[in-house]
Length: 209
Ligand SMILES: [Zn+2]
Ligand SMILES: [Zn+2]
Image 1 (tube, rainbow, N blue to C red):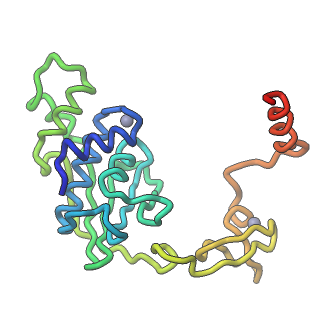
Image 2 (image 1 turned 30 degrees about the vertical axis):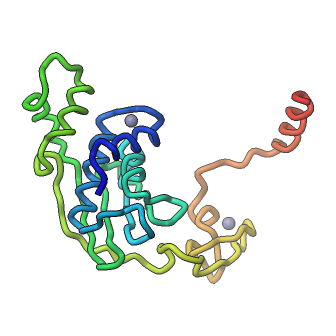
């Protein structure tokens, strides 16, 4: 495994230069996860799959250290809003869930001088605090279905309402019809009638040339 400082530099680069406490926590968490699973070179191949339970700072550090990516299907975002991740070794079928302890904040001042700002103090303390003080670790079982694993799509169907294609068994069956989740459960977006994005882009293009 590469050194903490090297990995933190990668995480910070991915996080657009911000060295926040979340980056330090994320790097420590990812290193611990890999270490507990006995994976020295996590960025090689697709052996490691990580479920990230937050979409804040930490998530970038986890991606940087592990090499796991959404587009490789090795990084799964689970929208729990928690500072926790589960590291799954698909070779040995072992999984470790790691949660950042809320009470780690209470121990920060034992590790750093009091003249630091709160954020600087957290960041510096999280670099040196023992793993046990930072994290709760549990061995868990994660049953990853074929349609969530890396590799070619296992299925493709069309939604009978909107006509859009759906990969990897994300469809829903309702009254004998195949629907996409948007048509079955509601969308995160609203369609605007009478808007023509192409026209806007074209007129912008004309203005520029
Ligand atoms: Zn950040
Ligand atoms: Zn649909």
